[in-house]
Image (cartoon, rainbow, N blue to C red):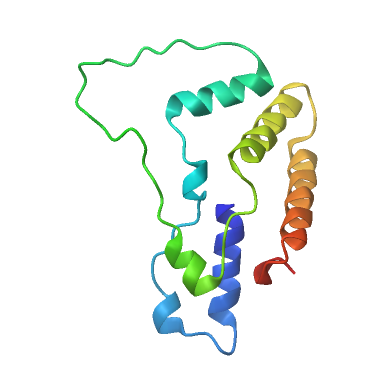
Length: 132
């Protein structure tokens, strides 16, 4: 998702009608707020696709950190008409699948190319302006 966002930002920056004074600044490209999860949620979701287990060894007496760190993607959404294509479950599934295939001896470049194609198809079906 972030790579798609950065590529769209680059395309907008070189467009003839680009407002570079607005676009030449920081953008966050990440999940929708509905896809934000705790570290434990991410670990459990990955393990559903890969097998295995984990043990929470966090220190309950450690200094407090926010339970969720959220990227605000509203700027990218409003100024670039950008939004993520995949939800949490799809992102985890695709990511875990990449690692499992590579572990089993598949060519990493081939897996990556196939997953980019899957992403492009999903983006086209969503009919987003940057996915044509």
